[in-house]
Image (cartoon, rainbow, N blue to C red):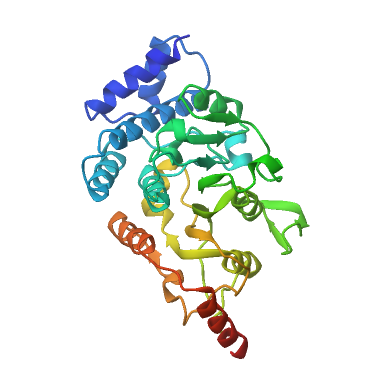
Length: 336
């Protein structure tokens, strides 16, 4: 069995612009002596395209981010295989890696120009969400054995296998400049009130746990399920407690509804998504999730890569107001 030969053949096909499907991957796997199931072959193929995307980024430091992004989008649209294999493990744990164009923009938003940023990805999969950063600056965590093995060969600063729905060790608190994550979706058996809010979605719990490891001046990019909608009173309709928690404790730059059927389906799912971009922790908890009047863009849906770039670029350039101004806004909210 030679996984390196298999991956090398896939990368060679990518460089030629060849489109591969599961039939091609089976042939390449057989030639490399791989007798494992289709899921194993597809996981290694995803590792190969993770490496390919990272090479695009590493070789593009002398050009503008928009140009790098366009290269990634082009490869994603025209060459990258679709993840078509679904087994019980993937369904149970909702193991859908982030589409590379989205992952690149999430990394770009979090880039503050630090020479050696400390980056943490708590549910890393094969590492696809980390392509913006050199692996030496990134610590990754993953429970799945196949994916964790794939991570161990990429040169990351650390590879761990902790339960990311449970608080990490105290030594990890506020240790990272960048938190970037796409946790699995689903419900917990019991409501968790650890954070003072009735969270019950597993992705919400994992986000709250991950954000504890972010420094006060850090940035975070988060991908969770569903789209943000407002009710008749102009307030966020579903999971408001979670969004109140985020906006009370962190500077939320924006939330972006993503049409997954158009921008994400190659990763094996078209479930609605939203991207949450955070620029630092508030000095003191204050406020709630905004109303429709205050943040109408929260309800907009992005259905093309160009529009997604524009939304992230706007969020990168957003400046946050002082604590005094926040207090004034909070008083206005109470009077509504």
